[in-house]
Image (tube, rainbow, N blue to C red; front, side, top):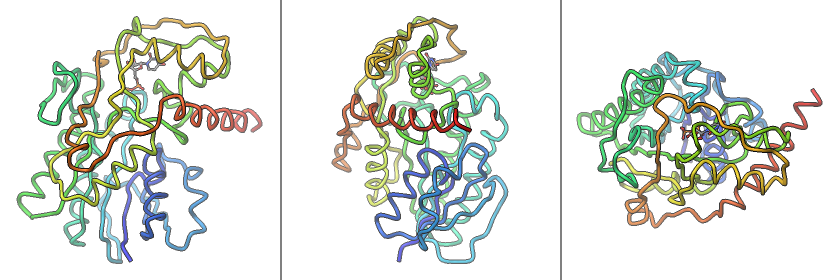
Length: 316
Ligand code: UDP
């Protein structure tokens, strides 16, 4: 039986990944500090004898006393608000956490998979962004803690690949949404859905002309699974190339929720990227992968999740 260790396994993406790996008959060791992850995301997996939760902060070295075939490093604060509140932890999990988990993979002779990000492209000057673009990142701005930690992580993974011959994968994940995002993590999807449900104004930052491209979590996890099983060592973009402005996105959320919310404008955060769209030619060619979920369908599922979560919160 294949054993996969997932760091950040109690987080948004990590929990969906644990679920998928179990469905593929892997044994799963979920490692999470629970700083931004939640046991609620994995409660439904805990009765499965093939699933194990190890509460640990991966910035501190750790050992696992059993065979491990895959190490997938998905731990990190991932919303701009989280990494502004946890700047040092964000830097540490992307650097020390990557080093420690690479060391574990090397000791176990395991395959290594790094969850990187479209933030490595910063505020991009090339559009859409292909993997060959080196990016436009402000290292000392407030977002630099996340962007530079992930860039360092990618460099570290490639060094382990080149020096130690470790079998490695790097995915650059573009904006992904779906059930289990934290309602209060400050990202645009939970923020707008929550505001629309409450019929309060949607907080559009800037004039809303900045663009993003939103990928449903199931599509993303399918791409991760295919990349894990491929032989691609270079970084690969995964995301949905359908791009829209944040203002268009706000209008879509109001319509899909049937909300009476209006749109309010707030200042644009520092270094907020003006445009973002993945070039997924590489994933299409190598994995035969592309997203298949329509935005309205993915959002309907996500809105239903938030309605339920927020109702449960208000009953507490
Ligand atoms: N945004 C917004 N209102 C919010 C939260 C975010 O207008 O309440 C904007 C934000 O400025 C950015 C985009 O939505 O341009 C996506 O933000 P998010 O925090 O989801 O992730 P990012 O893509 O910036 O990492």
